[in-house]
Every structure is written in C-alpha cells, then in structure tokens.
Length: 259
Length: 315
Image (cartoon, rainbow over all chains, first blue to last red; front, side, top):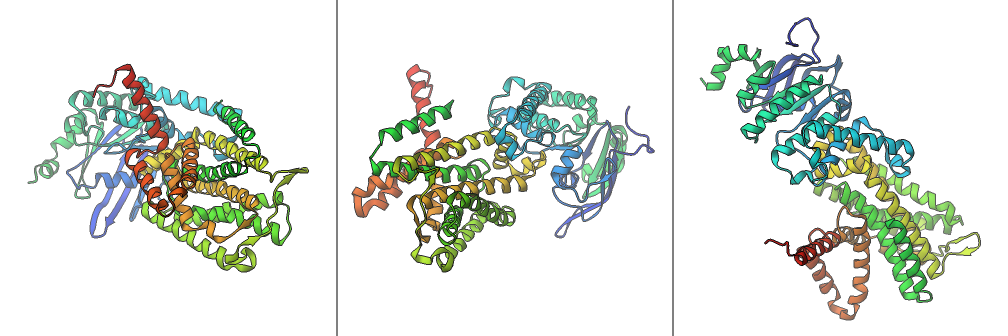
C-alpha cells in the first residue's frame, strides 16, 4: 500500500473547512488529508456536503473559514485556472462536455493550461505556435488512446453514448496533467460492465502517479478500489480510514441506515 | 485556398460591375455589414456572448475618424489607428464589468451602453455635429491613387473583409478559438479545465469592437457624412439578426447574413407600405424553418438531397 504514514505530509490538506449557504451549514469543520498516489473516496448520504467540498477544493467558491492546502500552498486566494495549472483537475457529476465540439477538441481544451498560444500568436501562427499545436494534438490523441476512445476523436462529443462521454471528460481532465484529480460520482449512470472498466481506468490513472479523490455512491466500486475513505454526514466528518475500517464503524452504519 | 477563391470572386465581380454605380455601392455596403457581422459573430456565435450595443462601436469608429479628419484635418490614415484603439479601449472599459454578466443581463448591459453612446453622438455637438451629423469627411486616397471611386472603394472594403476573415479563421482554429467555443458550450466546464473565462471573453469583445470600428471607419470615408441615426439600437439589432440568420459560429454565415439582410430591403421596396411586414415575415420564416441559420440550413438541405438521391434516407 502506498498510503498511510501520518508523518508524511499530504498532497491535499483540508484544515477546519467551513462553508454556509444562507442558513445551511453545508460543510462544518472538516479536516482530512489526501496522501499522494492514493485513490481516496468521499462518501456520505445525500446532502452530506460532498459536492460542496469538491467545489471548495476546486475553487468554485471560497471557504468561510479554514484552509485548503495543496502541495504546501494555500489555495484560498487562487483563481480556478491557477489551481488547474497547479495540478488540480476535476470531472462533473452530470458530465459537462463541450457538446458541439469534437472529442479531440474537448481534450485539446483540457490542454489549455499546458499551452501558451495567445490572441496574436493564433493570428500570426508562427512556427513555434504550429509546433505547439502539433504537440498538443499528439498529446490529446495519447489521452484519448489511454481511455480507449482514439477511434472517436473526430465525432461530436455530444453524439457519444453516455459512458463514452464520461471517458472523454476523464481524458480532458488528464490532459491538464494534474497531480490530483477529483471525480464527482464517476460511476453515476454507468452499467455494471462500464463501472468495472471505470474501476480499471482509475487504477491505471493512479499508476501514472495521479492522486484521485472521488465522490461515489456505488459502494461496491468504492470499497473495491479506494485505498482510503472519508465519510461525511450532514456537513461534518463522521469517520475516516481504510474501506474495512469504515465498513466496521458503527457511526457510519447508523448514518446510512438512518438509525 | 478558400480565401484565394474568395479574392478571385471579389476581383471578378468588381471588374464585371465596372461603371454600374448602384451595384458597386450596394456591394460595398454588404462588405461593411459583413465586417460588422463577422466581428459580432466571433463574440456571439463562437463565445456565446450577446451584444445588443454593437452599433456603438461602429459609431465610435466612424465618429473618431470623422472628428479627427474634420476638426483637426488629420489624414485618414493617421486617424485609422486612433479609431481602432479608441473602440478597443472603450470596449475594454465597458467589457470588464459587463462581461461578468451573462444571458439577458449581458444583453441589457450592452443595450444600455449602446443607448448611452447614441445619446453622446447626438448631443455632443461640438465634436459630433449633433443631430445634423458631421459633414466634410475626406475620402480615401493612397499615394496619389484615388480610392473613392466605386470600384476602388469596393476593393478596399472587401480587402478588409478578406483580411478579417483570414484572421478570424486562424483565431477560430487555434487554442484561443477552442477556448471561446468551450465557453459557449459550458462556461463552468471551460473554467474548470483552466480557461481564464473572464479574460477570454474580454479579449474577444475588444476584438469584435475593433472590427466594428474598422467598419465604421470605412463607412465614414465612403459616405463622407455621418449622423447619429446610423448607429441606433435598431442598427445593433440588425447586426444581431445578420449573425443569427446567417448562422452562428460560421465565418461564411456572417457573409450570407449580411448579404441577405442588405439585399432584402432593396428588393422589398416594391411592396412599399407592406415592406416591413414582409421583411419581418421572411425573418420569421427563416428562423422557423432554418433555426440553425442559412449556412447550416442550406447545407442540411443539400445533404438531405444528396442522401435522398443515393436512396439512403431511411425515415
């Protein structure tokens, strides 16, 4: 196992995070760490604050109090695109693709923070821009190949089956060369077969050295692939540990059974 | 390749129209509107941001060059960069706060801006000549060559169109263009993959304003007289209609939309009092039957026709 060892500093550290929307205290005093190189899952009943926490980590909205530290840097004052170039990528619960663009173009947009060409560069199209574009296309094709969709590169993203759209989204996130990838319910809407493939894909991504943090409702998938699990309930952290530890935790059982 | 062909078509048309003043002028106007439409299309069609005040930038271009050449006797070639920069700077100042808005709110914001500029054109009499307009704008000439004749000016305008098309085509098929289209489809996702959406939107807004100012410059030195009536809210709406009718997110759609909406009133004038009703009816018809605009619609019909001939239409 690559994880554990409390002395090792986590790639991502959440420290006493708080967030309220009006009167709803969506995230209350949550602290945990994500070690580099693991697959960590965030689970909890509906309304537990999982997606809110995702949006806080990816900079969609700011924390009320507390800190989120990525790679030893406080992310509090960073814009979303800064966080992406620091190495945080994400996918969405409902798959947010650029539907009218081709699959390849979608992944190319994922390379945005790793390429430079600006407005004038695009117009002048000097050799360095051409080279960058060519390399970008090669990289994008590489990631499409990685998720098994190289054959669909020129299809419109919106025309693909749902399972494939999810893979495109993962390829797009990978294209930004993240160190941490957040997957918001990656198995939602997939059939059993696709879910199995997704599990394999996530392991392959981890083996590339990318740390994964996922929110997932599919318990069998979560228990099978996660190295570590954090359980949230009503905005607060309920439990944390290996899948086996979490499954045995009575507080978790109570929360899930509504007892 | 396409651009070479396009240039050849322009040159041949210009040659064929030799001496036909009415059609030369009509074609020049189409060129000016194409410029406006293609610039607006970069903003609306590609980046998905609506502007209901684009005639203001058209006016800023025209009045800047008008004021500099009439009041200060500048050469038009010196006032050209000033006109473009003026529009760009104003677009930057206006766009910075307004582009934080989206949808209807952005529409309202730009609409308000357009109206303010129109009032300014009408009331700032010392500079703009007020409601009476600005008279005595010089025509263009270059190294002793008179560019004001029908055919020469047609070439000047369409040369600008060609150059703008070329620039837009390169922008669209680049990292920048992809980011803009990404914003159109999902601003949330575009920002999540690291596109600085505020910056990208502002850049394309400034770009489209500069193109509109170029059109304004060409217009001012063509008719040599400008008045506020040209740069009203209705003009802005007409530009939006050109983009939508021609086809969003298509450079050639802007050409088609501008041509269609410039020629239509010319040919409908025979209906006299009923002109506006028929004009409106045609626009409604296009939007109902070809909701993707003329470019896409015509292509779809062509593809369906081809498929039918091959006997592969299944439904």
